[in-house]
Length: 326
Image (cartoon, rainbow, N blue to C red; front, top):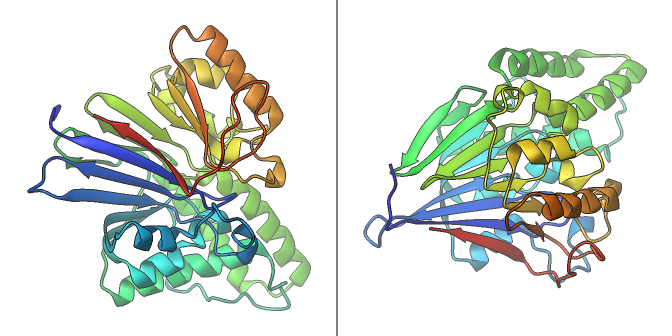
């Protein structure tokens, strides 16, 4: 059902390399604003210090006078997605928390043995647990999401979870939990590295629909992960807005994926220093090639500032970029 009086704002907060995406739905003045935050960027100081146009997610919410979220979503457990959610969980009122991997009760904040304290995946596991603990202290309902889950959020505004499959995510989280029982440091390090890499394609793939427009947010899903999305395999995965997976790294997208999804707007969340080869020049070139052949208007947006010439026009960084749909 379409609500012609409503509008939807999608804001990609400039948290550096990570991701924090705010959706704000407004139907009318009486009903207020329905807000969803997807991921919260990193908590690492290096992502913010010395970058005047980057902002921590919770600071941006305060700056926008946002003290309440209807839904908080964590797509997967990587530091650049979950780290910033710790302070959001502490400081913001939240009605519901959705996650593919709500940290199990038996997870400890610290891993055994002599695991390096600066291991960012270990940090992420700890931050996922801290986020859940803060939310449980506030009695916030926690929902595990997986493929097949759908919700009508407001008239004309809904969300579907396209991946991962429930059995796969449950098996993955059970195996991941075993790292807390390992006594051999070498085996622990190997397991952590493998699970860190595999986590990308266990991201929640979210399809929002608003007044017949579709917004596809794929977390850190890379090109090998699209094969786990039934809608993609069946050539029925279309979207008006695509947030590229894996921060626009070289493995984030192919021409086949772009042709199947056929977006009008693509967004890359990456940092100006192109950490981990994010916003890779080959990806930018591919997006330009798609623009030239797609047969409709196409725009590519970037959450931070870096050189995208000669394929697109360079633009100055800001604290956030916002799309408004009606």
